[in-house]
Image: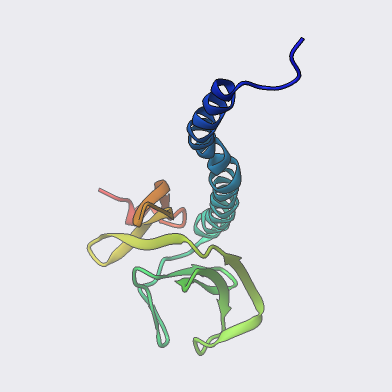
Length: 173
């Protein structure tokens, strides 16, 4: 009975080991990089969906979707919603979405803020108008992911929230 390996057996193992290591490195990359990155993307998308629920609730209760309130203007990064008890602003800036209740002078009432941190998110607001009346708002959301030095929009969606406060004389034609 022999007690060692032949030179041929050792050479075969030395030749096969790098091939197996290269093949298995992709599997390890999935576990080490791709799965945690996917979890972070899902967490950010959950925050965006929570923010969208708040927008939906506010727009359902809204009296109007003004284009301007004092010195604050609705644009692609800010949405104004006029509620019976006052006006709120949703603003997307540098990876954060901030919901702020505005005072009569347009200043933020700091005790009435809500913040969603979404560092890789893309959020744009687009009011839908008929004549001079804004009757809905379209919210585009996505989470950006860098894959091989190229940005991809994941979980890209467009949501439309219709103003419920329209009277019969303001019906959309």
